[in-house]
Image (cartoon, rainbow, N blue to C red; front, top):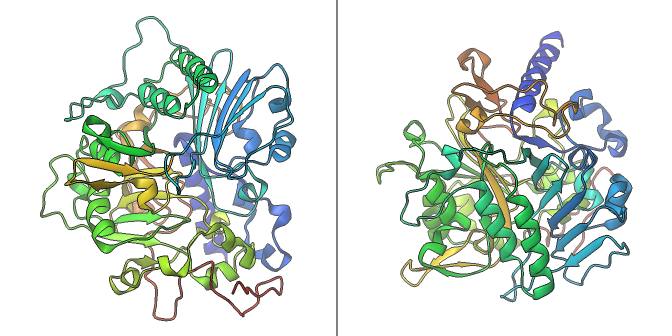
Length: 494
């Protein structure tokens, strides 16, 4: 209808404004792979403001550093031929269980030594060095084809210039006076994280060279704060540098009084073995952290997870569930009985309503206005292994996985903008402006209630999320599903 088309245009226009100003982007949907049964349900606007792999790896970079869990080298080189050039050194860190062979002379491959049996190297990042600066990208995609085709994923991307004499530290990123005495400076956190990967002389020297190269750049305008996870049993100040304890420490610096009773959303693509005590206690306390927090704050957690019917009717059909890692035993009864489970509902105007989530986001929002306090884009799924857990009377913090994420608050959009590819329609800087006293909103916020300096954040799902009904069955990848998907396939796994 004309009214629905007008509404769709208004939302996409708002998305354009957000895409030009906000530091993270949805990644491209491969429209040529969309099944014919769903062609009409995916709008022409699906990719208007999303980025491809080759957008992120664009321009004449002269060195590359990547981390990820999974790689397909042929796929990467087909999209970014520059990665195979002998003149472009490429340091590749991976988490592949059975090793990774890379038949390229310019590539140095390394798999970190993991301290625990079930530890995983899960960080998804790219660092590209250019003549005049460096590009940092924090992703939710693996470097494999299926993660760049029909799934909902996203990337935080920012370019940073070389340091100039007299550069002042970024007040938002360098203030910490917490008990940890550890700076939130983007540069320090990034370099320390990279060096934590090194176990062995050869790779240690390489990573030290890369961090020294990073330190020549000015990160004072970072539009986000890094939230890393590093395996270990951390004590003392180290407890507050990683995982959910770092998030707790960072959020404690910001005045979020307005959101003291606001729900917290956890949207993920894999879930570990949970207990109500951990999820609604220790972890929720970190997500709900703020300056001058009170025990009277009303804390509410909303988990966004697809139903089995949503997986069946997705663009990928049942096969898409292979990337939604959850055995039935991890879908705990208390997720339902305590009303934690909410359905994934992708934004139709962006064609994400049938694109399974591989993205991982956490946020806090006001249900009446859909205003957001902050947004966290990360590789961390909903598990103790990724986020960490307190031990020994809260004197020790145990983490199993390597992860990396970036927390964005409205204050960060007041930072100056620099681009290494200034003519790129999204990653360029020509249309971007600093936003005075910005506010974050989702797609669902009525325009009439939003202030002029509001930005619609590129979250691919609707808020508030809808609770599971009694007929909804949460997706589990070890269950049989006899109803066929759009390819006529049923799922039989046992």
